[in-house]
Length: 84
Image (cartoon, rainbow, N blue to C red; front, side):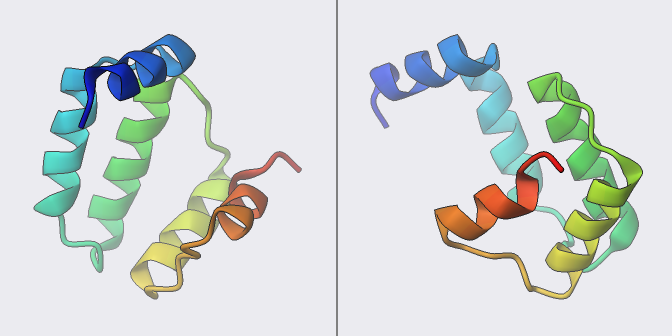
């Protein structure tokens, strides 16, 4: 991927390219059927993005991931992660 892509992400999120790659590596090796693992990944992403995740939202995300029911289109993801 181009550096411009990661430069833009870093400018918008303050998340470094190295951290994105570390996260991608941890996700690729993670057991996404294990609730504790999924919760740890959610906490890691929230901390990296400096965004709090409510218990309710965390539970919703965990359930969707474990049940392989995660929406893959941008509109559905936006609704899922949007503020209530």
